Amino acid sequence: MYSLKGKTVYAGIAIGKIELHRKEKGSVRRYKVDDKAEELKRLERGLDKTEEELKSLYEKALVEVGESGAAIFEVHQMMLRDQDYIDSINNIIDGEGVNAEFAVAVTADNFAGMFASMEDEYFKARAADIKDISERLITVLKGKSGAEGASSEPVILAAEDLSPSETVQLDKSRILAFVTRLGSANSHTAILARTMSIPALIGVDFEDEKIDGAFAIADGIKGELIIDPDEATLEKYKALKAKEEEKARLLLEMKGKETITKSGRKIRLYSNIGGVGDLSAVLENDAEGIGLFRSEFLYLEKETYPTEEEQFNVYRTAAQTMAGKLVIIRTLDIGADKQIDYFGLEKEDNPAMGYRAIRICLDRPEIFRTQLRALLRASAYGKIGIMFPMIISLDEVKQIKEIVESVKEELRADNISYGDTELGIMIETPAAVMISEELAKEVDFFSIGTNDLTQYTLAIDRQNRRLDSIYDPHHPAVLRMIKTVIDNGHKHNTWVGICGELGADPTLTETFVEMGIDELSVSPNFILPLRKAIRNAD
Ligand code: PEP
Ligand code: MG
Image 1 (cartoon, helix red, strand yellow):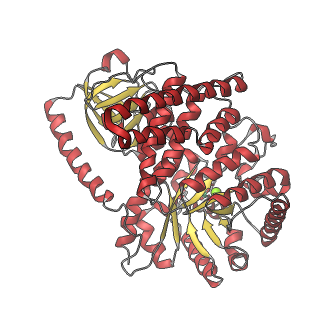
Image 2 (tube, protein in one colour):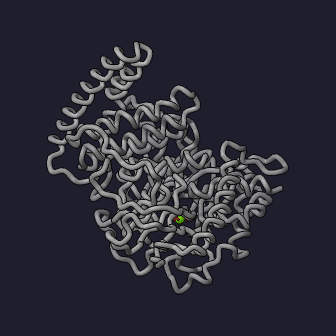
Image 3 (tube, protein in one colour):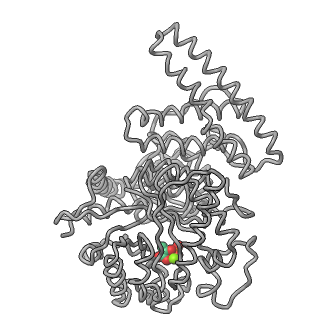
């Protein structure tokens, strides 16, 4: 018996045999293509070939199972030629300059998530069909035929690294845990592991030949991979696993339940996301909306400014996937710890208090207007809220509202439709707290960013590790500010939420409810525990 340390991405315990993941097996790699036009043509050829395959499957099924049984392959042909589906794949190839297989895998994921979130059972069931046709298309694009066989025994999957599309394509029923040598805790793969509630460890320095086929315990609680455990260790872990499963079962009971306090007050329980890749986790964890979509990741992952069209596609996917539930998208919040080369920002002595977020947007309206156009256009496809970060003055809010109005005018002149959007601001500076009564008259909602509010209130740089022990969001100054903001918001019918990390702290749930909080927005995996905490609050 020996053990290897790793970093936990999703806590939980798995016991079983390790299988080394071989990249070629049914996985999709993301790579950059030199010639986008050629890649789009390759996709077209792939679509034609897949359509042919579906036609012959229909013919075969017609003979073997009759018309009603064969009809599904007709539906698949229609889905394959759906314009939105094809547009999405084309846009990913064109926008990101990546391979068609990857574009199909991402589109499949988004569309499947969108269908899965629909109320109508018929549409819900289409999620599996989208995945099915996409897998077929990917196989065709790879120039292979048929799925490669794999043993059906569930395993702990060990890999160098896993891309999101590889992760989503794995047969989840066969995976007890993920163990990777590389990977980051904030990666989309990590988020997917959390979504799928599969214990996952990253940064485990294993040797391929030593662990392949070995019996092991993946301890996602302590962050350890135990290979060839002895009898006593195995027994201990079996007992621990049973306890964990019981806990998880209790949480799952929270799915589909109302987020309501004992005294009957309804709290909106929303999710924070960094991109559309997180949407599946949002749906899986039953969030009632999105309270913070950090749009800056869209800018961070690119080498130049994302175009209006690229942004529109992303925001539209979010709006459509959430199918009528509120999606609050925060406008660009860069600067400070989030630097982007192509913005050409000067080095600053004090970046946390520097040229960042709304300050950049108001200073460079062309960037701001592009994002607002994309957001407003997407609002025609769902329920979008727009939120502005780092506000310190009434004047900023008035300027923002004027710009929003002028962008709307421009859209109307171009005959482009947009929906109703709620406008809100983040309350993350003491200045905004102190003038929250005046600000409340101007906006539909407040979302308290406790991460920055703590930093600015306590004068502690949130990036400074040496000050971690005194960076205290429970400080009475921060808590009193939250109460002030809630009271001031309510004086003018402005609803108030928290989207900073503090919102997920179950030791404060009761306090926030007592203060009158209307909404809490947290990472997807905190949704169900928080629902439980709210249902237990008075
Ligand atoms: C916050 O400051 O609390 C917040 C939610 O925004 P970010 O963490 O992205 O600065
Ligand atoms: Mg912030």
